[in-house]
Amino acid sequence: MYKKRRIERHQLPCFLRVFNGVNDRPIGFLGNVSENGLMLISHLPLMVGADFELHLKIPSDEGPQQNIKLKANCLWCHEDVTPMHFDAGFRLHWTPPEYLQLISALQQYFSFYPLPESA
Image 1: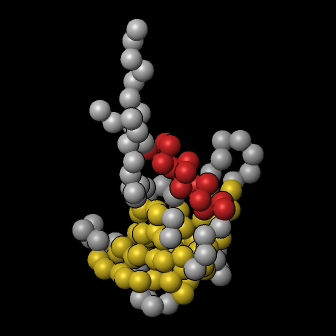
Image 2: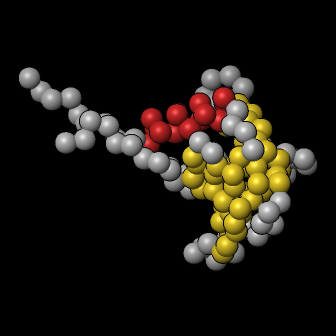
């Protein structure tokens, strides 16, 4: 029996928006995350091989939203199964502590833990 479910990547369909770090316009949504990269779902194809400044604006129930700035390189981009959507894979140039905290929070939120055994 599983003690804790470990998931390498977490699917995050269309609720964590990603913004262009230069002009602060929406660029897409987080598709999944890992310690060294992320997948972005966008309405436009993104240039493979290009460096991007990405800005995550994480909503908060308490206090101001959390802002995470990332620099990443687009490794691949292809059309999604959803019409007029594109998936793009990014490798992060460096991983800020706030991004690692986000990954940890998402892992806890989306993980399944066994129910306590009744005595």
